[in-house]
Length: 174
Image 1 (cartoon, rainbow, N blue to C red):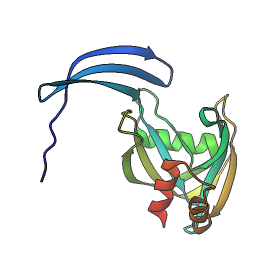
Image 2: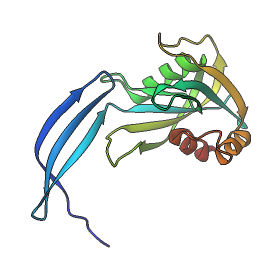
Image 3: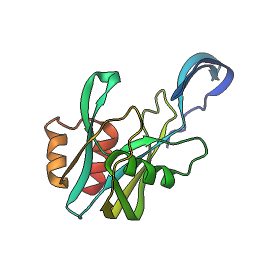
Image 4: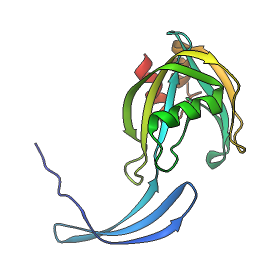
């Protein structure tokens, strides 16, 4: 078993502080070497695999500014400061889809891009659902899509679904 040398932060500078992310630049030492690491700080988020029936999954189609296109995704969202991940999952599911669930199960925790970002995502499965009214954020527009899990996975394989957190979540349902 190979043990990798830990890197130790010697200095850190906050370069940007935003509403969603912060960017810091760290001077790091390891084995008499000095390197610079750029780190995106993110509070973390939740992803929800909502299943109105065992063979179905709820997806949302929404525009993503950073890539200038619509994506089909599992419902997801950012944690609020100090918020419990399960509470956030319940909030995000209602906001984006209108669905509410009685049965919740945490499937996994995963880092979205650990090479440069500390965002930790909590993936939940939601079952025993009822449909209410969506309560989207003021800057959020979603189209709700309910399809068979197998069809969603086919969309992954043919490139129609290319969002990493959604691919991971759907893989947990296959």
